[in-house]
Image (cartoon, rainbow, N blue to C red; front, side, top):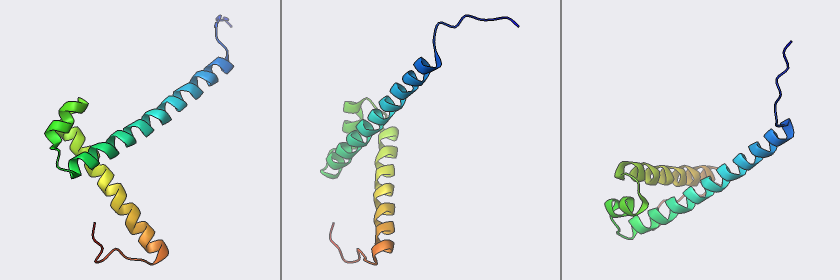
Length: 93
């Protein structure tokens, strides 16, 4: 059996993996914050074309993100409504 010298250890691999997971978590949080602000600006009347250009995204990509946020919010509200027995009928947004 041939031995191959590997200058790294499994501990270093696990440390690197932990850093990757932390970075991915931070990036996900940053994307959620960006999407939240973009959604608020769009609701205030800023066109998607302008927001997409400022963010360096395509209009389609930004529209997709805004739709996904809206869907998450609506599904979250309907799940909460089912859990606590409340409704949002007649509520003013």
